[in-house]
Image (cartoon, rainbow, N blue to C red; front, side, top):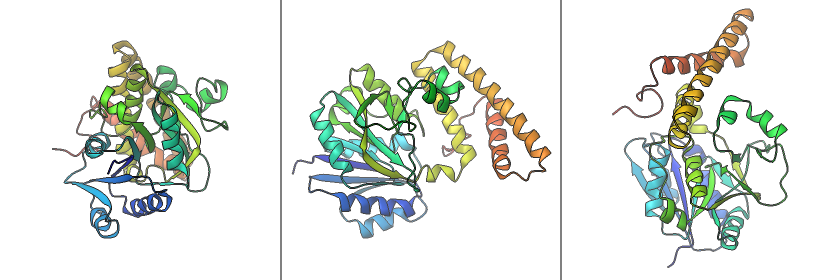
Length: 316
């Protein structure tokens, strides 16, 4: 049977969200020929066993260790046989009609390389579902202010979109790509362990002449960053590493140096302000108490010249 849609989910210790995610896919299946591929990245919470027991239709790939998102997603992409490839986070649940809207849109827009929907928090508030390609402006200035003052150049959750719009990039928590993407631009770049791999992919699609779209009516609940949030400081290190990598690959040496200097200055200023705030309030402000060790970990990583062994990547 010809598979129309392949849904690929990379999971790492997210059993409490993965099972509802798979259930939401079953409930919203409109009868299209589709396959579901779960790539378990060395989870220790019994995710793989639960999937085998409760969701027999799922193709399960079990890794012995955490390979990172890009490498694991590529395992799923290589196994997938669908015309359209749907990357979905395990902590996401698709609302009724979302999958059908994605497929219908992609079929009617052959110029589209990828499309993403509108993500919502658990409480129903909107998340940012659109990402601009990283630049010195986006990384050194406040993104919310950029979206507020320049809404056309920096679209975001602050505006209501009544119809699909073309954007730089979409968030990889829910992203549909055409088979032609893999054929023309290749798989996700496995140099990224976590964060910005989908942005890099969209950048390469744009360079190949494809378009990226945000579809506001395709709605997804996203319990944001649950696996990464358990190790916040290490996740932040990976995010910084991914930003530097994107600049090295796509922006050039001089912008990369300016980014490195600018982010270090911002980190030191933030660390000093948070430390002073904690001392003046005798460490009673919870937000500042949480932020202080994260700033310290990031500064330590930079002072050690950004070693590969610090972060979320398993040490070989």
